[in-house]
Each structure stands twice: as structure tokens, then as C-alpha cells.
Length: 241
Image 1: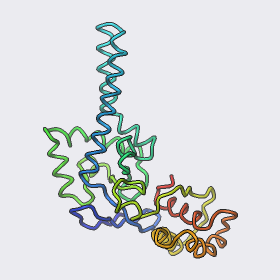
Image 2: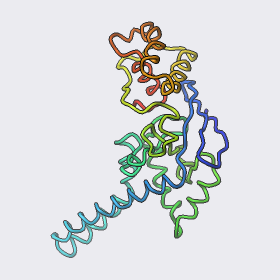
Image 3: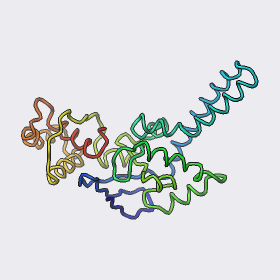
Image 4: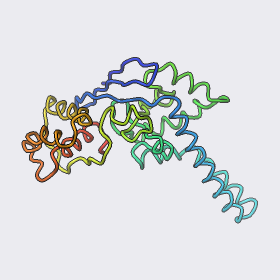
């Protein structure tokens, strides 16, 4: 079950994961998504130019059919393949610091990615994409029709180019989840997530002092205490997958 707060501007959405973890997502608004879309469109055109040049060496008939097939594949499957291979990010989304997730915060799966991109045609049916624009402006989380149908959101990551979002949910940095995940209660998971949100305000030394008893209780071994807990937090929210 997912809980949302109504939003008309870039703001957080409260999310409850299937595991009972509460945390905040920060939906990406129209400007940053438009920039990501533009970058991806330029890359798609570049790919097609290379393919067309290569197809030209195959002769008129064969080259024309190959070019049409490649155009279809790039247009319809580029986003889907990127989202599944690169944790919800195409090149444009990666540069802008956003990604696609399920509306419970979990990583996007093949079915959801395929459906949201299949309906991209409906969202962009008319000139200047008015259907997508209207849907994103009036919906919580700035979701276009494809996102509504697939149950997905486009959210900021810790590496977002938007400064207010860099440390809004988790600190930037490489905090991989531990190989062995301990069995934790709901309250323990919430405490770890709260620590992750407070980490940017604590400083590394103070954060290690606070997290050391918890990391020792969880048998973190020789891992840096704060990094261990931050890795767990990323695992709970799907960012570490």
C-alpha cells in the first residue's frame, strides 16, 4: 500500500513499502524531466544516424528495411532497456540525477517499464505533448499516463543536479548494502532510516560514534559503523539494488 500527499510543486511523497518501511520520495518535476527527455532524444537520433549510415552500405531495398526496423526498436525499446539495465535510468535521467521507481519506492520491474513506455505514444500523441503536460501538472508526483498505468514514479536521486534534493532523503556517496542483511523489526528499520536522513547534519565522526553500538549489535564486523547503517538504509529503500 502506498500513501501520497497531494503535491502541485516539487515536494516529497510519503511512501510505505511492502516491507512496512516508511520513507520519503522526491518526485522530479516537469523542467528536469524535460531536460532528461531532450538528452535521450539526442542520443536516440545519434544512434539512428549511425545505423542509417551502416544500412546505406546494404543496398537500397535491404538497407531501407533494416533502417525501418532499427528505427522502430530504438524508438520503442530504448527507454525500457535502459531502465532495466541501469536501475531505472536512461542516459538523460542519469545526467540529471533522476530515476524511475515503482510507486512503493522499489526498483522498476520489466512489466512496469514496458507498460509505462508503451503508453509513451499516448502521452506524446499531439504536438508539444499536451496530454503528458496536463497529466503531470494535475497529478501528485508529476505522473504522466504511462506512470499512472504502470504504477511508477520518476524521482530525484542523491546525485541530482537540483541542490535541494541532494541530501533530502539520503547523503550522496558510495554506501553499498552489506552482503548479509540481518533480520530487523519494523522499529529497528525505522531507526536506521532516520539515522540515514540525519547523517548529513551529524558529520562523519559524530555519525560513527552514534552508529557504533548499533553496528556492533548487528555484527557489522570491521565495516565503518555509519557506512554499514547507510548501506542498510539504501537496501531498505531499493537504492542499493
